[in-house]
Every structure is written in C-alpha cells, then in structure tokens.
Amino acid sequence: MTVLIAGAGIAGLSLALTCEQIGVPFKVFETAEELKPLGVGINLQPNAVRELFDLGLEDDLSDIGVATREYGFFSKSGLEIWTEPRGKWAGYHWPQYSVHRGALQMLLYRKLVERAGPDCVETGWRAVGFENTSEGAVLRLVSTRDGGERREAARLAVGADGIHSAIRAQMEPDEGPPKWAGAVLWRATTKTKPFRTGASMALIGHATQRLVAYPISKPDPQSGLVTVNWIAELTFDPDAVWNKEDWNRKADIGDFLPAFADWTFDWIDVPALITGAETVYEYPMVDRDPIERWTDGAVALMGDAAHATYPVGSNGASQAIVDARKIGRAFLDHGVTPEALLAYEDEILPATRNIILTNRGSGPDAVLQMIEDRCGGSFDRIEDVASHAELASHAEKYKKIAGFSVDELNALPVTIPDGARV
Image (tube, rainbow, N blue to C red; front, side, top):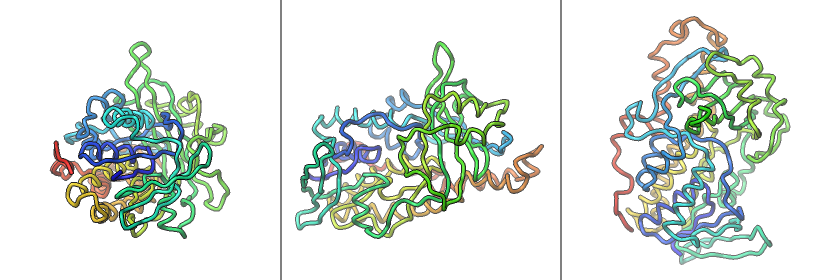
C-alpha cells in the first residue's frame, strides 16, 4: 500500500477520497468497530465547501446541510451587536453549510466505499504508534476486538486520529493531555421553530456565558419545525476537577440551565431550546498548544491530531478538509514522498498555529466580551457602543487568519485540478 491513514473521521475520509481522486493507493484504519453518525452540528466554511464540491459532493451537501445565510452576535440581553451575510449571500463562490457532523462523516464514508470499494476501510483497529524504515513507514495497530497486534507497511502514513492521537504522542512524548482553560460545553439538538432568517447562526452572551445556535435541517413540510443545533457554554475555575473530554457523556441540564433561565427573547427562547432537547452531551472545551512539526520522516499529522483548537469560528472540520486537499496537492507536486509531507507542513502549519492562538481569546466571538465590558450587554443603539467600522474590521481580521476572506478565497486557483493524477 502507498498511504496508510489512521482514523476515519472527517479528516481521514477526506484524505482517502482525495487519494482515490488522484490515483494514490491507500488504506484507512479506524478504531471504532462500526462507523455510526455520532456528534451534533458543525459548520463548513466556503474554503472547505469548495474542496468538497471538487470531490463531486455538491448535490450531496445540499441534501444533508443548510446553506447558512447569516452569522450574528447578540448580547446577553438578546440585542443585535453585529450580523453579516454568509456563503453566497456574502459574495463567496461557494455556500457555507451547517450540517450534522455524523451525516457528513457517513456521506464521506459512503462515497469512499462507492468509489474505492468496501475493503479500503478496516474498522476495529487502533493506531498505537509508527516506525520509519528505509522503505517508508510502518503503522503499529491493535485490535479493539481481541487486543491482537499487527504492523502495516507503506510508503507514507498519516495520523488523522484526533485530539488524542497516538501518532502525535509518539512525536511529542512530553506533551501530556489536552489543555483545559475552564470552559464547559453542553451540546444538543432540538426540534423547534426557525429563528431570524431560518438559516441563521447566532452567538449570544459573552466570554464566560454564551450560547450558539443554528439549524442543521430544512423545515419539516408538515410541522415547519427545524432541527437546531445548540451549544451552551459556562466558564469555571481552571483548577477545578472536571470530567475528561468525551462527546458521548450525557449531561444533566440542571448543571447549566439556571444560568440561562432568563434568556427568553422575542426571536429565540433559550430555556425552551435547552429543555426541548432529547439528549444533551457535556464536554470540557480543550485544545492543544501548537507544535513545531507535524512530520517525522514518512509520517505526518492532519486535522485535530495536528492542530486541535477551540470550536470558535467554525474552523475545525473545515481545516481538516483543507488539510486533506493540501496533502493531495503536495502529492501531485512532489510525488508520494516525505518531501510532499514537508511541503504540506510548511504551507499549513504556520496558519493553523495562528488560528489556535487566536481562538483562545481573539476569535470572532471576542466581540461579545468587548460589548459586555463596555455596556454590560445593554444598549439602545449599538453605534453608541462600537462603530460599524470597528465591528467590520474585527470580523474581517479573523476571516483572513482562518483563510476564508471573500476576495482572497474567490481568487485562489483550484487546489487539485480536475483529472489530475499522481
């Protein structure tokens, strides 16, 4: 095999589809014994959507996602601070999509199996380490069924094995666990009436107490209801003991609902949104410090294994997809070689370092705390608190850092030309 991929999440599957597109033999190993549509909502920025379109998934994304029309910040009193159009409504050549993470993962998996066959992904195998050899890379795997071990050799290996990556742990043995700064997230979906445009993404509150909400389904033809993904966030003492990150831990809404009890506004009812969820999941918000390298010989990191960041600015899944396409482009330019992995690292690592650090306090949502500090979240006219120019500048600054400034993205050449093969 030419390329081994550890992990069948959004990052690993995007890379596998890219390898299939450009004619690079590959194999994916996934820890889970069966791929299931886990998780809740995510957003795909236009820089990632354009790459998925180039993989032939345009119609499929329209079927499973909601084209986001509006992105807005609101004070803890529900007052509008700043809203802006998104996707094609903002002038991009591609939409922004809000979508269920599990639906996207299963779409990528289904398309991969259709194009490359069912044997391209092996489930029930956890990557636990790697070796570099004169011939390339060896991936060390352990069966989650019976604990059996195996070694797979290839020209290259890529760790797409998430925030707890064993590949990264071998490269950075002294790093330790992910970093927690005190914020805890509660995530769920609720069937409810659409708010604002019906395709709006809203961030409400301030740095230590906020809620994010956006629809991830089209209205039901009978009821008119949509599925709204929401994330409630509170900040605690970073020295407090909290549960280890685990997307599958069910939560007690009594732990956080009282903090949002009076957040009933004329455009969204937050307490009703929270109590209307069937199941709520709890997760401490963590990230990792940027590291100096993602490559070790014939092995590289991508996605959360390379650059786990706070879920700010709707950038995590988008960057994982961009990673995959940039690796594919590097294969076209340098062959399936360690030099290609270094070229990918040289291009993407500095940008994601900036994203990680920016998301720790200077991301697009920092405007919420700015308004809270200036007026306590109450105002008659936002212009009396912050000018339009100041708010617009703040929004554009993050787009440039994250790689989806409208004019710059629209002007970029295609990452992988149609029909290009290694």
